[in-house]
Image 1 (spheres, one colour):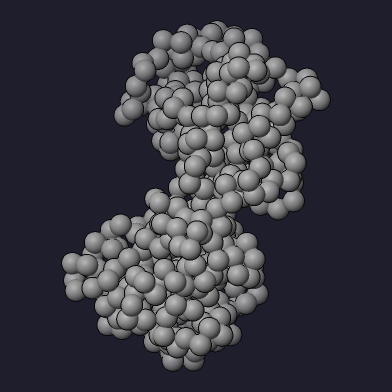
Image 2 (cartoon, rainbow, N blue to C red):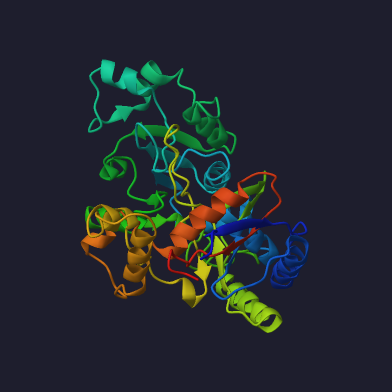
Length: 395
């Protein structure tokens, strides 16, 4: 019986630039890694490519002016409310710059004590000590009185001040309100750009139902090309990142074509059926800082069909403590192996699965990949995983 289960390798590639043949680069890099590391390809191996290099290779970029023009077209009044943007210099500040360039006045409503992905905006002790609670509406004046000295522990800046100055630099007026009731924004403007990520559809539906006029989300901005720019038909500006002071890298739009091309090429060159996916944020939470690593709209925007579904696993601890509590050593191991080999194809809801992770396979693998490749200078935008679909009964 094998002594090693899942093995994960970060694969180094050349630096990816716009219009590169990414499928060929990924396959060639894997074949080189095989020779240097002396591994063999197997069926159900997984190759994952970070969304950043996919979008780069697609040349899926847009300028601040492109976004500003789309904002002007879709919000002709020029006076809009921005609802629940995340507090991010990398993710949202460049978008705010573009929105401000396309508007006359913006009211920004921020949730508290943190944004959607866990970035804090105020000192919770001060909040409590002043008799405020999460159902209150905090005015900009009240925020300035109580929380003007608040600095984010990671960035060391006050994001309210940062966003205010950024908007003013674009000759746009701005004010703030702090509320966890999404309907508050309609007191300031009936035209709203919904900036939250994962509850955007419900938010838009509610605002339209209670009197909102032009209610759009970030997914509705740059969902078509403007002046030949990049775009994303499904996610618009969601999942974008700052590229330069005047340019944004958008979420990839042709991932499905890429994963299928890599799958086909690897099948031809290795004879093995290897799954392929594109991954972004891993969807995990930092227990100390409270930050969710999920500012992208999805963990995986594209993947081959073999990665659909959720795990169908037995909880070994449950079997050992209950059904086989009287067994030990090899006898216990063989009993569990037999149980795994005879398990149903769908274990959902059974006691033997309690404690197993019900997340989608692409979300689980995406977390593994995001942690492996990191977000800095590792130089491994491709992750190669072997044995992920093995279990204790695998030979």
